[in-house]
Image (cartoon, rainbow, N blue to C red; front, side, top):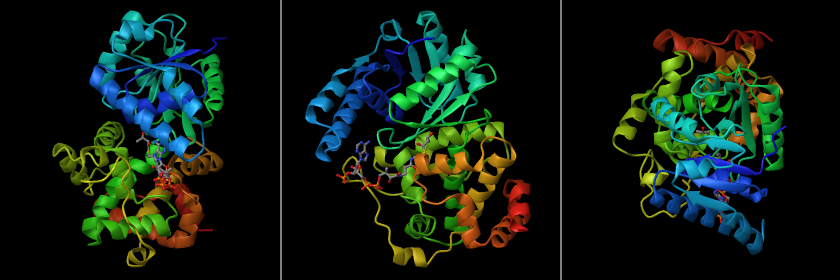
Length: 383
Ligand code: 3HC
């Protein structure tokens, strides 16, 4: 069985740099690879900032922070980055054409012992595994933003993945202090993004259809749906470029998974990517690296998030009906991956299951198939 010592991370963006940091904190030697030195400098600065925060909060000592930083080697040369690597984790942007190019290049230099993992947000793992010469040694390891703070990693084997690769990577995830949830089916969006990405699009529809303000909807999401952030706030924090790409890949594979809202396309084309670009749904000019939006219980009082509760419950029911996960894993994934303090079904019960189903039925009459209530949700509503 392969022993993991050296890990190569391909892509030093939001996810890549965070994964590098958490894996290094567990003692692994990390090579962080990107196509330009400036991108790597930016990534190393973010790691320094994050380690500084952890020291400030006395979660680690300054010596530990120095060691974590010192075990990460930024590299541009791909051949050098893959030398003697036990595991590569690909974390490049969510664009299949780009990923095809990356894997074609990787194939030139990757060694026989190296396992492949992708941190893809949505793409079926089998599709990516087929781009390599060893699909049986390929698995999905999906981290959550910020990887330094979010405990969840979705582990997604494809139909090709061998048992050894599953055990080695599950063991690795535990060693780096994360909590894995095994995704039983290789579906687009896996578990969490099947809930998160459609929710962003739906919240954007609610702005218009309910004539609501962004902070009203976000306050209701935070205070009435027991989420740690508003949904527009989270979208800006995650990056609208990431959400846009993930949405396109999801929509092109499964019409039932998402109801694309043109506002996401517009913000993306205007390069309003959220916090990282200074504007997204909200404006962050003048903010530091970690701007948060002021949300309040008073504003939450003025908005009923029934549509959002219904969308979450419906997609959650789809995951269960289709055998992607059981209810325990679903609740765990949403708690650890998105900080949801309540199960989607508990929330739906609190809002009234009958009301949730009738909301979906009237939306489906007006706007089509995407809103049709899942059979499981209908059964639950009948008690
Ligand atoms: N490293 C270290 N510290 C960090 C950090 C990082 N990367 N990011 C933030 N912090 C710090 C903050 O600066 C803050 O420090 P301060 O008190 O000195 O200002 C501290 O952590 C706590 O932050 P908050 O006060 O904002 O506290 P919260 O309780 O809200 O926790 C959170 C922050 C964990 C991010 C929480 O808001 C949360 O869980 N949000 C939801 C995140 C989420 O849903 N992520 C998943 C998105 S989907 C995804 O990633 C999938 C992808 O495929 C699209």
